Image (cartoon, rainbow, N blue to C red; front, side):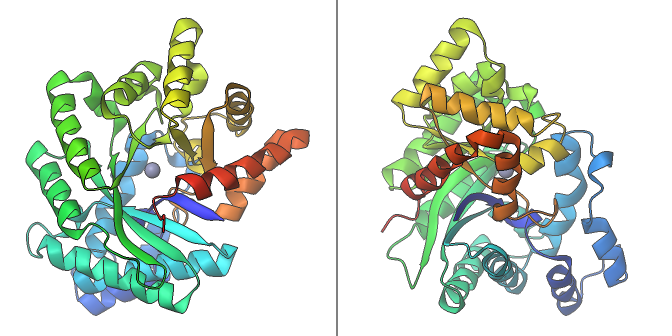
Length: 339
Ligand SMILES: [Zn+2]
């Protein structure tokens, strides 16, 4: 199995985060392991939206992961845990390097180098191929996002070491309520960023269409301008109707763009009401010949793993569960970890 969509900020167990925190000697509001574990054990019923989810946890998890030692340890344990749970073949880990600098206390190169080393160590200890995707931030300034792009170019993959591919692509993440794709100036700048990384042979994936804030209209706009290789979520496709639906399906098919579906997190953030909506989307994708994969998003925070994500969709699909075999094949084809 291959996980193409997992965020470092939501994938590291509380025990590891606690060790990192204690070793770093940082002053935080978490005075005991239990306090940190309580914080990182989410109550899905209390989450109201994607913005709420992103705003509640990540400032703390990203802060704790913000030193070279912390970042290296965090990526290592993400891979080790995923392998022990699900015998993962490969994982692409995404994170925002600018959010791990403790407001300029650390330099970006030291953080990136530490995550590269952490993943090399993980791929040496476990038979898992790994790669890094940098997430740009919807809420960050254009300058900060350019810093991420320039860093991606500096650290772009050279040759894999053991199974560790290093930096393989970029992403856009953050609160969809900002609706960045509706802003022509923002989009123009984003296109330049994407052109730059693409000319360096890096992959492009893009969170859009996860919530109704970026529904079918902005999903279409993102594809027309950015032409990502893959889309993070894109589940708003299910709400498109008539001509809009035809156009969106045509764009996804013609550009061979695959959706990175992450079922459980959509349920937690109330982007869907029930997993049956994902099952219906899977059936729709098969009918329309649109490619998709199944992924975890934030496996620790939402108590899941890749095996479980497949199981819950299979259960909702019932007799159509065999359709999911295609998702495994697609993940092998669209991963940025190509030899
Ligand atoms: Zn995501």
